[in-house]
Amino acid sequence: MEEQSAATREISKNVNDVAGSTQEVTESIVTVRDATDDTQKASQQITEASSQLSSQEQALQSLRDNMHSFLESIKKVG
Image (cartoon, rainbow, N blue to C red; front, side, top):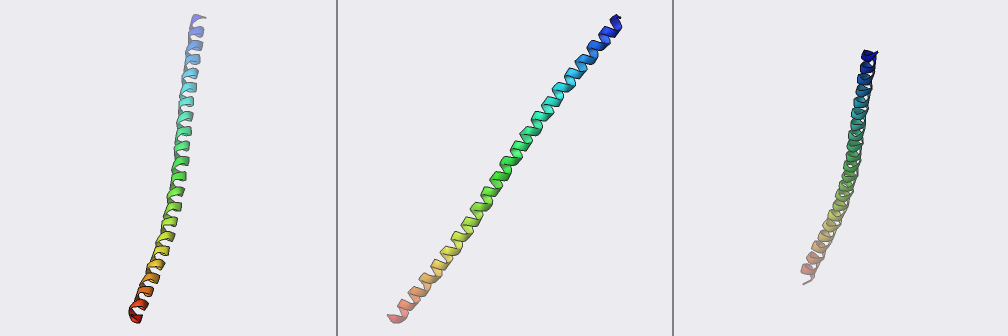
C-alpha cells in the first residue's frame, strides 16, 4: 500500500511539473506573438513613412524644376 501511495505522489508531482512547464511555454508563445505584432506595426509605420518621404521628394523635385524654369525665363527676359 505504501508503494502505491508513493507512486501516486510521484505521478501527481510529475503532472504538476508538466503543467507548470506547459504554462511557461504558453507564456513564451504569448510573448513571441506580442513581439511579432509589435514588429508588424513598426514595419507598417516605416512603410508609411517611406511612402510619405517619397511623395515629399517628388513634390520638392517638382518645385525645384518649376523654380529652375522660372529663373531661366527671368534670365531670358533680362
